[in-house]
Image (cartoon, rainbow, N blue to C red; front, side, top):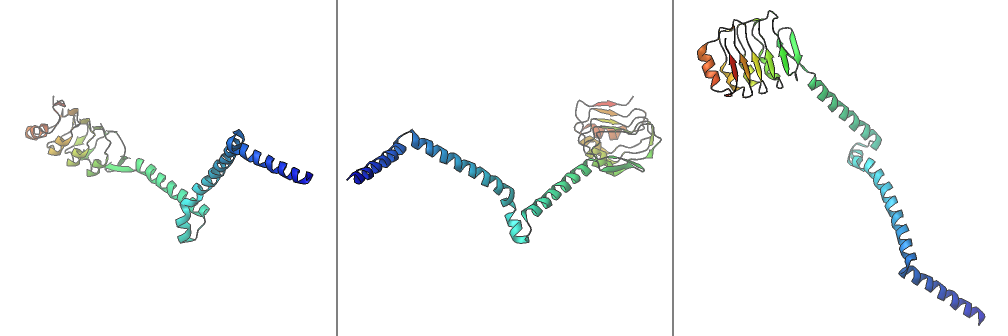
Length: 205
């Protein structure tokens, strides 16, 4: 009888503990501990998966390891970065023997005894804001100058220029157009002025 009583007492204690766990603070504490453990494990597994699972498709098809694939991706990224860097330092020949960076914003060729005309490649200087070819022996200006959409200053002064390309009228951001000391045709200038901003300063004397 004593043993049976002890068994019943033990069962009652276990049941009481179980009920306390369900209804009381102890249960919430246990649940919180379990939940925290799950979160930690999830973060660890998730972190590892992020580093490797993105390479699963490549690994399955090529048989390469995730590490190898990561190195290839890193190499490809470096190549792209190098291409971007090379583009920013790429040279453009604007006159025989004269090359400048493609991202140049100011081109000053004043007083260098140059003749003929600039090369059509000058159009590649898409960031150019100021072009100064004054005090040379240029006889013409390439029509491609009209493609320099960011140009603010165009200085052609003191050159034996006789004709102006109408494409200069496409320079919608032009602020100063210097023609002093040139032999430009007035008819050309009148046509060009129709396309230029009303605020542009045209210097002729």
